[in-house]
Each structure stands twice: as structure tokens, then as C-alpha cells.
Length: 230
Image 1 (cartoon, one colour):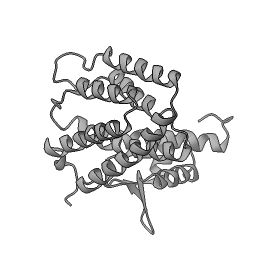
Image 2 (image 1 turned 135 degrees about the horizontal axis):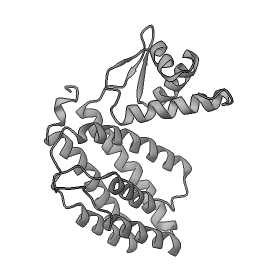
Image 3 (image 1 turned 90 degrees about the vertical axis):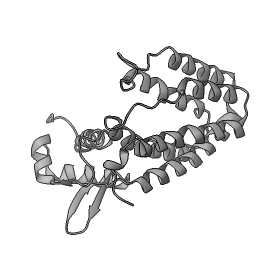
């Protein structure tokens, strides 16, 4: 770390580094986090690591246990389904606000995000390869654009927190389960049609199916091998 970096800046940097490791599965569920070891690896003080872990604990990515310190939050099939259900409910609230308030510029942005998604190759190489990073970026941008006109910072903040939790499951499962044969292009086409028609009920129903199908796919295609037993 640079000597000119402020204490808050150092904490933020370490927080972001650890957050990426947690979400992408580089730090496995249940792993005990040794603060002194992490501080030595990251070239920072133990206080900085402790502060970063405290923030990550508040997000549910790390578990803090009295007298035992910090560990990577466990994962389970029950939690995945609970996250998915709550995520659908929060997404629905954001969608209804966005569709009621969105203007023509917002709608144009949604259409543009859809076209970007459709013109981004989903896979590098053969059809059973994992979706590419550019495709995931375009996919997330499309979903973000749908709720972009929502006027509630707190709803959007909760949405982001649930998205991060969902991504943790998806990214850890990605290399362990078989390719999903769903027709995602068709699902996104249906979503765009519902959004541009300002049909909030249909959009909410479609997004619920879209999210829940992803969770079900993880559970049905072998993700239970790395999830805790219920």
C-alpha cells in the first residue's frame, strides 16, 4: 500500500479486495479468516483487516463469532432459495417504480442495453462453455437499466446487496455444474416487450421466473455438493 494513502482509503482498498475474493469463491464457505496472516499478505495492519472484515460481516459475506473471530459465511440450498425469493420481491418493487416513472430516455436506454446484450457473444468457443465476462456485463447492464428509473435509493441499495449475495452463489457454482440449456435470449426478449409495454405485472412475473429458474438450475444440476445440508 502507498504511504500517501489515507487510512480510510487503505480500508476501502482492502475491503474491495476481500469482497471480490468472497464473491468469486476464492475464499471458500466456512473458511476461518486469520487476521494476522491476511494483514501480512496484504501489507497492512491487523486493524485495517479487522475493519474491512467488520464491513463485510454487515453485508453477510463474513460471519463474526465471539471469541473465534471471522470466517467466510456458510452457504446452503435453503439460503439460496431465501435470497432468491427476497430478491424477486425487492426487484418487483424497483420495477414497478421504474416503469411508472421512466421517460422516453429511460426506455431508449433499456432498448439499447437489450441490443448490446443480444450482440454480445454469450460464449467463447463451443456451446457448452461458460458464459463470457462481456456477456455477463451486458446481462447485468440490461437488468440494471430496467430499474434505473426507480426513485428509491434504499430499494436500489437493497437490490444491490441481494445481487451480490446471488452472484456469490452463481460464481461459485459456475465451474461445478453443467451448462444451462434455457433459452435466455427468449426470456430477455419477453422482458423487453413487457417493459416497453409498461406492463408491470407481466414484467414482475417474468423476472420472478427468470431469477427462480437460475436458482433451481443450480440445485438440480449438482450444486448441492458444495452446499450445506439443510
